[in-house]
Image 1 (cartoon, rainbow, N blue to C red):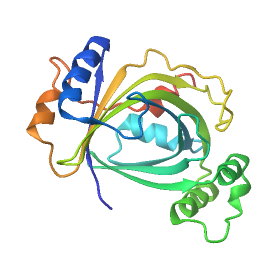
Image 2 (cartoon, one colour):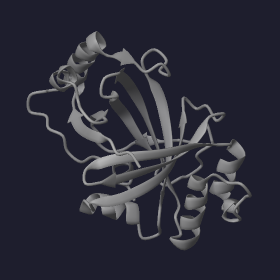
Image 3 (cartoon, one colour):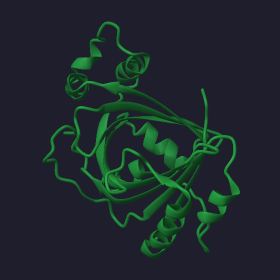
Length: 223
């Protein structure tokens, strides 16, 4: 399992304008972005005891969370992801799901494990059975992504974070979400073995430091 380095830095609108200008000069926009950005919708899972949320808040060194994700409201491309953290490093495993499979997860029918199911889906089903993992909340936000080849660097700006207040109707295009409190603009910097100096210098903002932040936790502020 390959782990990546990751910084999460809370910034404001003025910071965003300055950083965006710098990065456009040295990085490329993600090829999947439309006009430089795309919309992300994620459905997060947790146990009845909120294991994933509590481990995040408590800063547990080794933890994981599952989510289903789509981009720009396109239900033809749905992914199941498992995000793992260990010693401050991160790993993400991902597989594509069909809309029918996602509907089965939402309804609970998926607990009857389908034949030839991918391993990651089998793991989710197993934990839905043994840990009572269930859909918890839908998280919406806008992302501006930039990429840089050396070091496999990815810098993203996430803003407009919204929560479904516990509704898990993930595939409903008319699902109403509301602002997740006073959520900041979030810059994420991810890289493999090294971060090139040109990128390290470009993402520096006076008075801003990397710190723990979870969009899932932010979107659970109302319960």
